[in-house]
Image (spheres, rainbow, N blue to C red):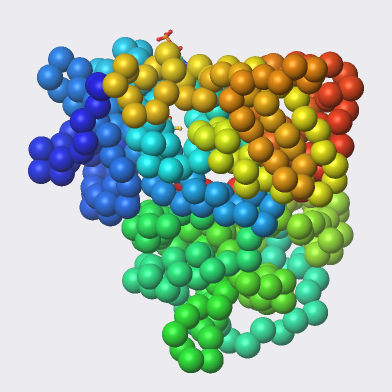
Length: 409
Ligand SMILES: CC(C)(COP(=O)(O)OP(=O)(O)OC[C@H]1O[C@@H](n2cnc3c(N)ncnc32)[C@H](O)[C@@H]1OP(=O)(O)O)[C@@H](O)C(=O)NCCC(=O)NCCS
């Protein structure tokens, strides 16, 4: 193995240096980085006796329809200026995933800096996320919420617990360690939150955290919203609307199942009037997260698809193996399998005679299984191929809602 585990006493300064070099922290934000790393598995890599790379992950769960799958989030991969293009980050990330997969993570995910880099480790691109920029005073919601409580960075425990309990949809990620929520809140520029406590005063029932609030009139950016039902969601939006006397633009990630445009008065007029201004109302779509299956048999065993049944031989390629040392505790999932998808799905090693063959990279197969795009589309744009009849059957069986991530990392 090329990695060693982060040793705070020995490595802290070098790790701060690297994150300063890549622009992730300012001079005075070392403490926030320390908080973040305390919630992560941290691997570091040396070059010529000097620490030049670190890769970090944190445990969580991934919602697949009604199932919560053990998940590892790769939430930071960095190499210092003097260590670039020596293969450090790629190998360190591969080893990180191997350790997490060997301990039970069924799926790994990450936010990419660019498309292509993590494909080499078997990742496939997720679906588009929508970022909406709206004038809060244009929200038409017939709700007058009671006065909320104000949340500050000191409320990270309450806030994190509220995030863990939130209403979830297909594709949502949840990260378990509260240090991550705490660090995100501390990184905020003039961050604040608003929300409501339950009648016992024990838990936050619903809240939003605004991680960036610029000047008097905005733009503001909502980092996340947590709620357990849709009335609470509307109540939070009404709180955002109530900022509209002062704030001209709020950006937020469109939640699953909701089309925010339904709630905006004259959206096209606003778009025309604010074009190219600081307060431009907008809708941007970007596919920035990637995932990969780490254990095919266990993922298939947790896949329940009521819409039909299809069996096939799978020839799966997994490029991560090339980045792993011989003694890695997990070696990727390349191989020959027989897969059945349906109400009771499964994958077994080996092929069965008479079944059609699907050939795929693990990234493309993960995208199909997760519902990012149907098999027929992936056969056109990604590394996935099979007989037309099989692709059609796969399209019919894998009718999934569009996955959305809902937790940035
Ligand atoms: C991204 C980063 C971690 C890479 O670190 P590194 O140690 O230089 O990476 P590696 O040596 O493992 O890989 C570099 C290789 O990836 C290739 N690569 C880079 N971007 C790529 C892409 N989008 N698609 C395919 N290959 C890509 C490079 O061309 C290089 O290949 P080469 O060695 O054949 O020339 C480093 O540039 C960095 O810290 N960037 C700033 C922070 C950041 O954005 N981190 C990623 C967060 S998701």
